[in-house]
Length: 229
Ligand code: ADP
Ligand code: MG
View 1 (cartoon, rainbow, N blue to C red):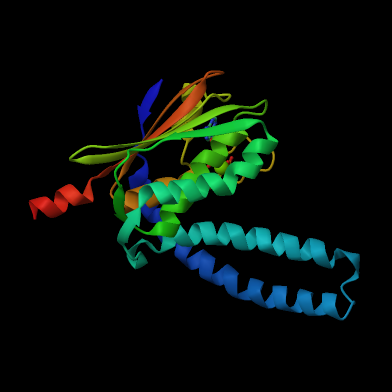
View 2 (cartoon, protein in one colour):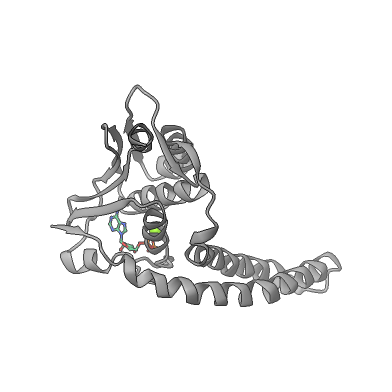
């Protein structure tokens, strides 16, 4: 089943909400974290101190995800070297992949590929997608990351041989808190879609239950745009 994802308009409203909530949560959290750490150091936090810190960090992580929705106008675009971003993400995920018997292969063009964007946000998208692919293959398998470049487009395909999804599940992708995982938060794809939207790119997914899933991202080739202008 193939479905073009066009839920991005809805994300505008979520962005405004996220801005408010993120700031309101961050500040008290920072204070609490400081005090718990102090109690830990003075050994008055009992054995629960570390657990409290872990949970605070978990909340902080979720708030950071929301910050991305909240601040599209603050993105600083620059020329990003796409394949080195992908290489560093793959390298970062390699230990986790190895642990689960997952092989990550890539096919990159021999020439340099640049995207106009915000490096850390692009990293986060690829991290979310490849991590999902790893998590979709509990008994191992192969992930293929392909970069293609034409005069007008740059595309990235991330393909796995994982559990796949039913049509209804595919339609829910990108909705906040949609997760089928025990420890998932259902924010990774929502944030990824928002980042792609901020970069004027498109993202498509095709998935077959028990066969695997393919995410296809494409951006306008910025070099081509420069030639035109
Ligand atoms: P999380 O990973 O925390 O669950 P995501 O937003 O990253 O949140 O993903 C949402 C859901 O989409 C996952 O729980 C899973 O059901 C589904 N999903 C995403 N990527 C894949 C994939 N590559 N293969 C199968 N299912 C996927
Ligand atoms: Mg995820």
